[in-house]
Amino acid sequence: MKLIKDKKIVIFILLFTIAYFIGGGIAMLVNAYEKDTLLADADNWGLGFSTEGQPPTANATADELKKYDTYYIGDTNKKVIYLTFDAGYENGYTSIILDALKKHNVPATFFLVGNYITTSPDLVKRMVAEGHNVGNHTYNHPDMSKISSVEAFRKELEDLEKAYEDITGEKMTKYYRPPQGKYSVNNLEMAKEQGYKTFFWSLAYVDWYNDKQPTKEEAFKKLLGRIHPGAIVLLHSTSKTNSEILDELLTKWEEMGYTFGILKDLAEKQE
Image (cartoon, rainbow, N blue to C red; front, side, top):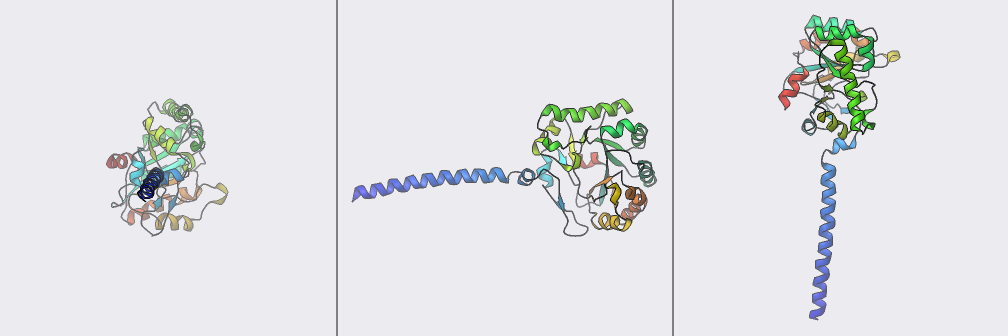
Protein backbone atom coordinates (compact mmCIF):
# COMPACT_ATOMS: atom_id res chain seq x y z
CA MET A 1 0.00 0.00 0.00
CA LYS A 2 2.84 2.36 0.95
CA LEU A 3 4.66 1.46 -2.30
CA ILE A 4 1.58 2.38 -4.34
CA LYS A 5 1.27 5.67 -2.47
CA ASP A 6 4.96 6.46 -3.02
CA LYS A 7 4.56 5.75 -6.75
CA LYS A 8 1.60 8.09 -6.89
CA ILE A 9 3.65 10.81 -5.19
CA VAL A 10 6.53 10.29 -7.63
CA ILE A 11 4.17 10.41 -10.61
CA PHE A 12 2.49 13.53 -9.24
CA ILE A 13 5.84 15.28 -8.75
CA LEU A 14 6.94 14.23 -12.23
CA LEU A 15 3.75 15.48 -13.85
CA PHE A 16 3.90 18.72 -11.86
CA THR A 17 7.51 19.29 -12.93
CA ILE A 18 6.69 18.65 -16.60
CA ALA A 19 3.68 20.96 -16.42
CA TYR A 20 5.74 23.64 -14.67
CA PHE A 21 8.46 23.67 -17.31
CA ILE A 22 6.02 23.44 -20.21
CA GLY A 23 3.98 26.24 -18.70
CA GLY A 24 7.11 28.28 -18.06
CA GLY A 25 8.21 27.75 -21.65
CA ILE A 26 4.85 28.87 -22.91
CA ALA A 27 4.96 31.88 -20.63
CA MET A 28 8.41 32.77 -21.92
CA LEU A 29 7.17 32.52 -25.50
CA VAL A 30 4.14 34.65 -24.66
CA ASN A 31 6.33 37.26 -22.97
CA ALA A 32 8.72 37.31 -25.92
CA TYR A 33 5.78 37.72 -28.28
CA GLU A 34 4.19 40.44 -26.18
CA LYS A 35 7.43 42.44 -26.17
CA ASP A 36 6.98 44.91 -29.01
CA THR A 37 4.22 42.67 -30.37
CA LEU A 38 2.75 45.45 -32.47
CA LEU A 39 6.12 46.20 -33.97
CA ALA A 40 6.84 42.53 -34.60
CA ASP A 41 3.48 41.89 -36.24
CA ALA A 42 3.78 44.60 -38.86
CA ASP A 43 6.23 45.71 -41.49
CA ASN A 44 4.04 48.50 -42.78
CA TRP A 45 3.24 51.55 -40.68
CA GLY A 46 -0.49 51.80 -40.05
CA LEU A 47 -3.01 53.97 -38.20
CA GLY A 48 -6.59 53.66 -37.06
CA PHE A 49 -8.83 56.69 -36.45
CA SER A 50 -11.87 56.29 -34.21
CA THR A 51 -12.63 59.74 -32.78
CA GLU A 52 -12.47 63.02 -34.67
CA GLY A 53 -9.82 65.37 -33.35
CA GLN A 54 -8.15 62.65 -31.27
CA PRO A 55 -4.85 60.82 -31.87
CA PRO A 56 -5.10 57.55 -33.80
CA THR A 57 -4.07 54.12 -32.65
CA ALA A 58 -0.88 52.95 -34.35
CA ASN A 59 1.24 49.85 -34.90
CA ALA A 60 3.08 50.65 -31.69
CA THR A 61 2.93 53.05 -28.81
CA ALA A 62 5.17 56.07 -28.48
CA ASP A 63 6.92 54.36 -25.55
CA GLU A 64 7.59 51.17 -27.54
CA LEU A 65 9.11 53.20 -30.35
CA LYS A 66 11.17 55.48 -28.15
CA LYS A 67 13.71 52.75 -27.37
CA TYR A 68 14.62 52.79 -31.08
CA ASP A 69 14.79 56.60 -31.25
CA THR A 70 11.62 56.39 -33.32
CA TYR A 71 8.63 58.75 -33.17
CA TYR A 72 5.23 59.10 -34.75
CA ILE A 73 3.49 61.68 -32.55
CA GLY A 74 4.33 64.52 -30.19
CA ASP A 75 2.75 65.70 -26.94
CA THR A 76 -0.94 64.87 -27.26
CA ASN A 77 -1.81 67.53 -24.70
CA LYS A 78 -0.49 70.39 -26.81
CA LYS A 79 -1.98 71.71 -30.04
CA VAL A 80 1.26 71.57 -31.99
CA ILE A 81 1.60 70.21 -35.52
CA TYR A 82 4.86 68.88 -37.01
CA LEU A 83 4.57 69.23 -40.77
CA THR A 84 6.56 66.89 -43.02
CA PHE A 85 6.70 66.27 -46.77
CA ASP A 86 7.93 63.19 -48.61
CA ALA A 87 9.43 63.85 -52.04
CA GLY A 88 10.55 61.09 -54.37
CA TYR A 89 10.76 63.47 -57.31
CA GLU A 90 9.91 67.04 -58.28
CA ASN A 91 6.48 67.35 -59.84
CA GLY A 92 6.32 71.12 -60.25
CA TYR A 93 4.58 71.98 -56.97
CA THR A 94 7.35 72.42 -54.40
CA SER A 95 7.82 76.13 -55.07
CA ILE A 96 4.12 76.76 -54.39
CA ILE A 97 4.35 74.72 -51.19
CA LEU A 98 7.43 76.64 -50.08
CA ASP A 99 5.64 79.93 -50.80
CA ALA A 100 2.74 78.92 -48.51
CA LEU A 101 5.10 77.81 -45.74
CA LYS A 102 7.00 81.09 -45.99
CA LYS A 103 3.78 83.12 -45.89
CA HIS A 104 2.73 81.42 -42.64
CA ASN A 105 6.25 81.19 -41.22
CA VAL A 106 5.81 77.44 -40.80
CA PRO A 107 8.87 75.17 -40.57
CA ALA A 108 8.73 71.79 -42.27
CA THR A 109 10.88 68.73 -42.82
CA PHE A 110 11.29 67.43 -46.36
CA PHE A 111 12.25 63.77 -46.58
CA LEU A 112 14.07 63.48 -49.91
CA VAL A 113 15.47 60.69 -52.06
CA GLY A 114 18.55 60.73 -54.29
CA ASN A 115 16.67 61.53 -57.49
CA TYR A 116 15.16 64.66 -55.97
CA ILE A 117 18.47 66.02 -54.71
CA THR A 118 20.33 65.44 -57.97
CA THR A 119 17.58 66.78 -60.27
CA SER A 120 16.33 69.70 -58.16
CA PRO A 121 19.36 71.16 -56.34
CA ASP A 122 18.00 74.73 -56.38
CA LEU A 123 14.85 73.67 -54.54
CA VAL A 124 16.90 71.77 -51.99
CA LYS A 125 19.00 74.88 -51.40
CA ARG A 126 15.84 76.95 -51.06
CA MET A 127 14.46 74.58 -48.43
CA VAL A 128 17.63 75.01 -46.40
CA ALA A 129 17.84 78.78 -46.93
CA GLU A 130 14.25 79.24 -45.73
CA GLY A 131 14.82 77.34 -42.51
CA HIS A 132 13.37 73.96 -43.38
CA ASN A 133 15.00 70.67 -42.56
CA VAL A 134 15.93 67.97 -45.06
CA GLY A 135 15.63 64.38 -43.86
CA ASN A 136 16.78 61.05 -45.29
CA HIS A 137 14.22 59.07 -47.30
CA THR A 138 17.02 56.79 -48.65
CA TYR A 139 18.84 57.19 -51.93
CA ASN A 140 16.88 54.68 -54.04
CA HIS A 141 13.55 54.47 -52.19
CA PRO A 142 13.60 50.66 -51.74
CA ASP A 143 11.51 48.50 -49.43
CA MET A 144 13.84 48.80 -46.45
CA SER A 145 12.06 46.05 -44.52
CA LYS A 146 13.63 43.60 -47.00
CA ILE A 147 17.14 44.85 -46.24
CA SER A 148 18.82 42.86 -43.48
CA SER A 149 22.45 43.70 -44.29
CA VAL A 150 23.91 46.52 -42.22
CA GLU A 151 26.17 47.44 -45.14
CA ALA A 152 23.27 47.74 -47.60
CA PHE A 153 21.18 49.66 -45.10
CA ARG A 154 24.03 52.05 -44.34
CA LYS A 155 24.72 52.61 -48.05
CA GLU A 156 21.15 53.78 -48.72
CA LEU A 157 21.49 56.43 -46.03
CA GLU A 158 25.09 57.43 -46.63
CA ASP A 159 24.66 57.84 -50.40
CA LEU A 160 21.89 60.35 -49.75
CA GLU A 161 23.96 62.13 -47.10
CA LYS A 162 26.76 62.57 -49.63
CA ALA A 163 24.43 63.85 -52.37
CA TYR A 164 22.96 66.38 -49.93
CA GLU A 165 26.37 67.54 -48.74
CA ASP A 166 27.63 67.89 -52.33
CA ILE A 167 24.68 70.21 -53.11
CA THR A 168 24.49 72.25 -49.92
CA GLY A 169 27.95 72.01 -48.40
CA GLU A 170 26.28 71.02 -45.12
CA LYS A 171 25.94 67.81 -43.15
CA MET A 172 22.49 66.24 -43.33
CA THR A 173 20.45 66.12 -40.14
CA LYS A 174 20.10 62.46 -39.20
CA TYR A 175 16.34 62.10 -39.53
CA TYR A 176 15.10 59.02 -41.36
CA ARG A 177 11.73 58.02 -42.79
CA PRO A 178 11.35 54.52 -44.27
CA PRO A 179 9.98 54.62 -47.84
CA GLN A 180 6.25 53.75 -47.90
CA GLY A 181 6.43 53.30 -44.14
CA LYS A 182 7.84 49.78 -44.60
CA TYR A 183 10.14 48.74 -41.81
CA SER A 184 11.30 46.02 -39.44
CA VAL A 185 12.48 46.24 -35.86
CA ASN A 186 15.93 45.37 -37.18
CA ASN A 187 15.73 48.41 -39.49
CA LEU A 188 14.89 50.70 -36.59
CA GLU A 189 17.81 49.32 -34.62
CA MET A 190 20.20 49.80 -37.57
CA ALA A 191 19.03 53.38 -38.08
CA LYS A 192 19.62 54.10 -34.40
CA GLU A 193 23.10 52.58 -34.60
CA GLN A 194 23.84 54.96 -37.49
CA GLY A 195 22.85 57.89 -35.26
CA TYR A 196 19.46 58.40 -36.92
CA LYS A 197 16.09 59.20 -35.44
CA THR A 198 13.24 57.58 -37.33
CA PHE A 199 9.98 59.43 -37.93
CA PHE A 200 6.69 57.87 -38.94
CA TRP A 201 3.48 59.93 -38.84
CA SER A 202 0.12 60.19 -37.11
CA LEU A 203 -1.81 61.78 -39.98
CA ALA A 204 -1.62 61.25 -43.74
CA TYR A 205 -4.03 60.67 -46.58
CA VAL A 206 -3.93 59.23 -50.09
CA ASP A 207 -2.39 62.14 -51.97
CA TRP A 208 0.33 60.48 -54.06
CA TYR A 209 -1.49 59.27 -57.17
CA ASN A 210 -0.94 61.83 -59.93
CA ASP A 211 -3.88 60.60 -61.97
CA LYS A 212 -6.24 60.32 -59.02
CA GLN A 213 -5.72 63.43 -56.93
CA PRO A 214 -8.18 64.03 -54.08
CA THR A 215 -10.57 66.95 -54.37
CA LYS A 216 -10.20 69.93 -52.08
CA GLU A 217 -13.24 68.73 -50.12
CA GLU A 218 -11.82 65.23 -49.70
CA ALA A 219 -8.49 66.61 -48.56
CA PHE A 220 -10.01 68.97 -46.00
CA LYS A 221 -12.28 66.23 -44.65
CA LYS A 222 -9.24 64.14 -43.75
CA LEU A 223 -6.75 66.86 -42.84
CA LEU A 224 -9.14 68.93 -40.72
CA GLY A 225 -11.24 66.13 -39.30
CA ARG A 226 -8.31 64.00 -38.23
CA ILE A 227 -5.89 66.67 -37.05
CA HIS A 228 -4.99 66.22 -33.39
CA PRO A 229 -2.58 67.61 -30.79
CA GLY A 230 1.00 66.52 -31.37
CA ALA A 231 0.33 65.39 -34.93
CA ILE A 232 3.21 64.52 -37.23
CA VAL A 233 1.56 65.19 -40.59
CA LEU A 234 2.82 63.52 -43.76
CA LEU A 235 1.99 65.17 -47.08
CA HIS A 236 3.55 64.53 -50.49
CA SER A 237 5.04 67.50 -52.29
CA THR A 238 4.22 65.80 -55.59
CA SER A 239 0.51 66.42 -54.95
CA LYS A 240 -1.25 69.08 -57.02
CA THR A 241 -4.06 69.20 -54.46
CA ASN A 242 -1.65 69.84 -51.62
CA SER A 243 -0.08 72.74 -53.47
CA GLU A 244 -3.52 74.24 -54.11
CA ILE A 245 -4.89 73.90 -50.56
CA LEU A 246 -1.82 74.40 -48.35
CA ASP A 247 -2.21 78.15 -47.82
CA GLU A 248 -5.87 77.74 -46.81
CA LEU A 249 -5.13 74.57 -44.84
CA LEU A 250 -2.49 76.31 -42.72
CA THR A 251 -4.93 79.16 -42.09
CA LYS A 252 -7.65 76.74 -40.99
CA TRP A 253 -5.31 74.86 -38.66
CA GLU A 254 -4.21 78.18 -37.16
CA GLU A 255 -7.86 79.17 -36.67
CA MET A 256 -8.34 75.87 -34.81
CA GLY A 257 -5.67 76.99 -32.34
CA TYR A 258 -2.73 75.00 -33.66
CA THR A 259 0.87 76.16 -33.83
CA PHE A 260 3.74 74.51 -35.72
CA GLY A 261 6.82 72.86 -34.27
CA ILE A 262 9.98 71.23 -35.58
CA LEU A 263 10.93 67.57 -35.29
CA LYS A 264 14.06 68.40 -33.32
CA ASP A 265 11.97 69.84 -30.50
CA LEU A 266 9.64 66.84 -30.53
CA ALA A 267 12.48 64.32 -30.27
CA GLU A 268 14.33 66.24 -27.56
CA LYS A 269 11.19 66.58 -25.43
CA GLN A 270 10.53 62.84 -25.57
CA GLU A 271 14.08 61.72 -24.77
